Image (cartoon, rainbow, N blue to C red; front, top):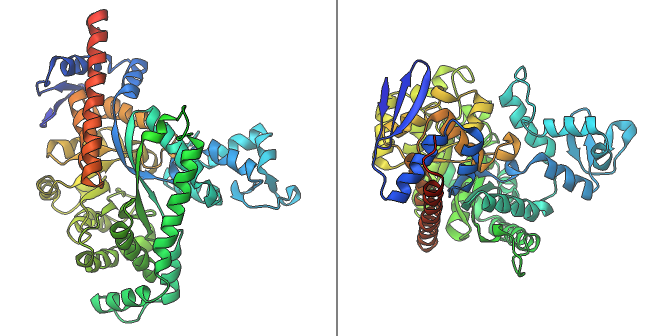
Amino acid sequence: MKLRTGFLAIVFAAGSVVATDVRAAGDPAEAATARTLAAIRNQPLALEAFLRDMPKGGDLHNHFTGSIYAESYMRWAVEDQMCVVIATYTLASGPCDAAAGRLPASAVMQNSTLYNETIDAWSMRNWPPRINGHLHFFQAFGRFGAIPRVRDGDMLAEITSRAAAEHVSYLELMMTPDGGVAARLGHEAGWPGGTPGPSEFSQLRQKLLASEWGEVLERAKQRLDAAEARRREVLKCATNTPDAGCLVTVRYISQVLRAGPPEEVFAQILAGFELSTNEPRVVGFNLVQPEDDPVAVRDFSLHMSMIDFLRPLYPRAQITLHAGEITDGLVPPEVLRFHIRDSIQRGHATRIGHGVDVMQEDGPYGLLREMAARKILVEIALSSNDLILGVNGARHPLRTYLEYGVPVALVTDDYGVSRSSHTLEWLKAVQEQALDYLTLKRMVRNSIDYAFVDPPTKARLKQALEDAFHQFEQQQAAATSKQGPRR
């Protein structure tokens, strides 16, 4: 059987998957680069080296705390004199008490068994298949969540330095810019009473705006200022030997914890609209936490109604939503039938995070055609979908999205917890999804074309990306000329 798209043909024969270019390359260097990838796709080490050097554009779906490797959290815990509760491998502030099972992080570092068990608990490293991957993944965040916010800048420095090393030029990082102020104000305001609807939404919005709402923007500005100043210090951006991470452009997505009470969720959505309208570094918002959480499932339609109500009041705000990060067996069948469609039609999302269950939605082919026509980009997270949902290879809808012309871009999601990297996501795309070079290149371009960044910055990023591709392809063509065709 053959699936044919605008970019590639995927041939299924005798259980194998082979990708072949079906569109002529634009110039000899591009063609030579495409041939190189085709020749080494079954040579894992050579393929990984090729993909590491390839320009990757932007990472549009990247959770701030989930992008840090557990070893960094442990190192900072030692420096900050924190403790590890051994019974649960949970990080906690001092004082420590070894007799009570609260060991200093420094002691854990000196015990190889405890150290490795803690790193495994804080990530998907050595994840045993007999344990629910979905549960283990999300539990990891609570275990290192006590890392103080003064480490934001160190985290930002690590993320941007690693991005630059893997030829990523732009990041949109999901975080809570205001440090939870909006959620607190929502809690204090309480629900106005009555059946949730426009009248109740209006009352709650007015009550929030009349409270200490200015603190939301002020706290966000302070947090981002502090983190970016520390990043510049750590990466030595003002010196003669700056880290390449200084050149990575960063913007932020304000996250909404959708498993909370309705008044807190509404306040955070309102903060997302307000921040992305008034703070240039915050370019949109997203709903986070497991989509299958019982509260998130119960209130999904309510959350879409909240966004639908607020959207006309903030026409410049941009929205990307986690939707379809669920699969058969994880939730009842009826939950799979509408989340992506409603996120687009009622949630006004112009990008969808994950979109794994698209074929379980009501009228999936019509939905795919609508997404293609409206140019709704899907943020594809291959490692995350594999580890959390068990969806990989031919069961993943990436090739279906390509077949129907839906724009897609590869993202890392929580690559620190997943023990992945930007390069390894592209490696999975080639090895497991049989994508060719021209398809990869289009996906890279999508990552900038669909970025929520201001037009001048986007134009600069696009030009820089084309320059990087030109240089990369020229180098590949020169290497091919010297070595002769690969076999």
